[in-house]
Image (cartoon, rainbow, N blue to C red; front, side, top):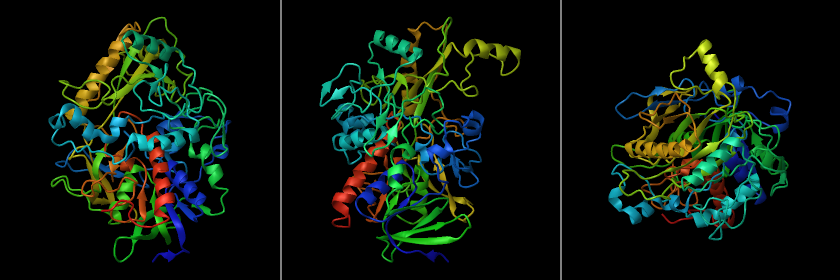
Length: 588
């Protein structure tokens, strides 16, 4: 029997990027906020001091900052004819754990989606006709436009101090920036990072190929910066330990460096860590949330009543909580009905390895989001007529790391061990380079999430079951992007180029990205979306669901900037509309 705690105005589930932003915004509105986080508290100064060892074995190989599968895992299958099995170790994606969430260990890549990404089905239908969209592809418009989100993109970038160069200011193309991006209201808060050798060579080759290279937008800062909440950040030192690691230099934007120092000073805020929410509670009508039930480290259950519930956990855990709590109709791929678990999508990555002579790229001089990129083959920036696919991605030369375990690259035919392998590693470590293509992943009827009928967790709850595979559209797109990338790389004069397009079936044991999307998506129709355009549940009006869970499909970009923009968009709607008149913000 859960012990009932005193009621609060707002309960926030999860204290990563979205949880920190929403908690701060609600406190600013004068509400009492309780944030409940499953993982431990993390501070930059104590957890990631400049004197701590950036241990690749501890953090990358042994996953020190991530959720342990023994705490919670998922089952995985490629299609409904297979039996799903539990993931015993994380592979293709890494669920975060602890205060700061994925914002602790992200690379800092800070992209805005294209305007056409937000009205994808409408855009593709208008340009190519409805028959260009595969029959089983369930892409849909978001219900919000780029123009509506632009001020909120701007706000998140100025929170992070994002370094970059605008390519479109108020509709006017700017030299040196991305000419394909949506219009910006102002420049990035800080200038681009200085580019290492390989990205500089790639930019030259891309120009020769008729493309439009620009510096990757990065929330690893190029110079000292004081953000909109008064937090001071320092310049990146190019240590190459960004993804999978915390940053002790205060140079990578994270909730710890941008939001939490302001939030924890507020008297109307309280955080409870190492407490796992197991259920969102509802009243007798099922139309209102009454709070949450959570379990502490002693295994004791507590009920936290609240007037407003904001779900800010990682994508798949948001979906699981909604299913466990009976909120929204579960999705059934067989009938294509229901909304919770629908439109699950991922990311379609590929790459090109190049081996050079008489080159020294100094790969250890690296930063999580430094690089030169082209967007010529992203989204619908190029004509897809006759190509047999829709979608695309950005690609280029990003200098993320030269770490000694994962950063080793040898030519095909090299033995996997022994003297010849050591010699190849020595010869190729400074002179080889990996170029990346980061492609979209659209949603399909067969890619979904539900509760597994067989496996349960330590609380007796059914595990979340993921059903996912890459479809022909994404595989064709990946091959096309990889070929175009290889053509540019060839202009750099390598002695050997090796292409790695994405192939099927989806392999959950090989790391790709942690960009899981969808499962409780936003939209304009309650029959095909779980959330309205303000990320408010259609079924429970005092419940808002944040994060990439709301993406109807995934674009060719990293999701964090759009996650942050949606958080501010939803926070504005709560503060200016919902609190004045609690109830549905969009008529059902």
